[in-house]
Image (cartoon, rainbow, N blue to C red; front, side, top):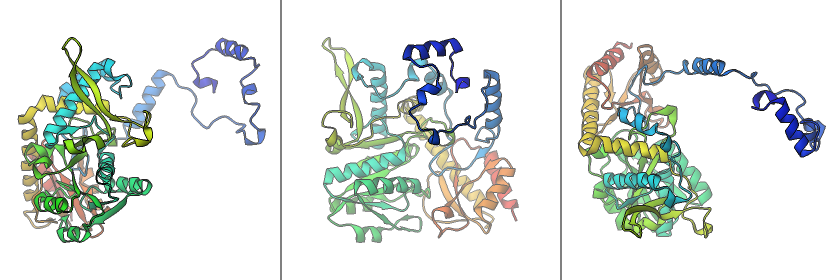
Length: 447
């Protein structure tokens, strides 16, 4: 143990003397000998700083990511362009502690950043207000479901199987302990089955959760769903890709009550799976049921602009048993990254990213299917992802692609057994014509 503690032998003696024992072993006298390990821990010996750096580099060199390979993998985490200004701004020391403000009003910089982030998310989604961000898109969706249950005082929630499988799994976990009845409805040809939805709607349904573009990349038709849901006096929860909102109608225009999603694509690196952030926005009607915290704008006694925590639902606070959620942390640094990203791109920039993703994905689809060797699984409008079917297994195809320094698509059959040998391909604005053409050539050459 002493090898890993930054103290000298003299420091140790002083500390032992101060507490009145002769050795470190004396500290553990109360622990029965039969349960003691009686040997050294099976860990490496201490290393110098140079040795640690060399060891860590040896491990990281085993990784191959988007800096080394061309990525056509999406399925919830996306390789979008990240402006260099983000790296320079978030490396400032004051942003490293972008965490939940406990003495909020003295953290004016943090509050302003959260306020600006909330404003942009609300504008992007077409909602009245957004919270300070959540752990990720999956937990944001689960919290939205609970929020709908609290708002409607109903106990059941319908979720389409075209919603991201990981989101559905997180919601199942929440449901088990929240005593929420979760109903999954089947997809039909890649989109939510309307007939199945109609059959499941009843007076106990608090909300219906739809994702668009959905997990297959297809743009769901929300108009009919919205009418059915609101005729049943349920809430409509829409999960969406924020980049798609640069060109598609936002959920607010369709009459959504709550909008959630994964914010990773807004300037955050892939980070081998995290940390990411979830966004959650809603209408004024449901504002007080929203989990987390909301920062508001005000003025001080001198009339100067300032920011305060307007609403917050925290388990530590008084009336904790009535808190709307036990979520007590917002992803401050990741939300700040998204704020800088949206500010840097602006309305025209986010539209261009969306348009390029749309155009390049459709060019890719046409190139990959023109010979007939690969076919589109669905004949539906898509944004930046689409499903291809092949006579070869996805594992086999991806192995060949990796040999050609390409990260292939996601194996849909893992979560949807009906779609065996089907691959979800993603194309963002980062992909060049040369990279897309190489993908087509490699795929065409697989026997």
